[in-house]
Length: 133
Image (cartoon, rainbow, N blue to C red; front, side):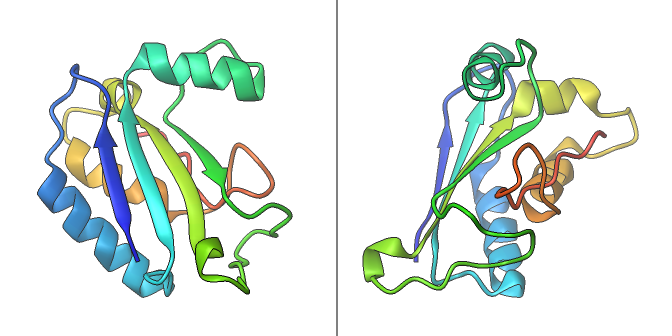
């Protein structure tokens, strides 16, 4: 199905083509290519606002995820009955925060791929990794 990548910030340059290519590989490895997924890149101000609303934490963060299906355990994938339910949800990447946390010898663009493909964090139903650079 569809991988939608939106860049809603102008602070850090995003190379969409390599990001899409690598995310498609990750989706294939995880066996979730038949599911829709949204990847939204935002700045510190935006991710802090979202974090304040949904997690009651008034600080920027690296990643927030909003699963389409609720009540899933870590590592569990949805078993939808209808075509419209083939949706994993949305991942918000705080790209400005991620860039600021990276060390000099780390490739920021590779870190963007690691973040949305790891273990659960920020919510018990989430399937995103929050990795400090």
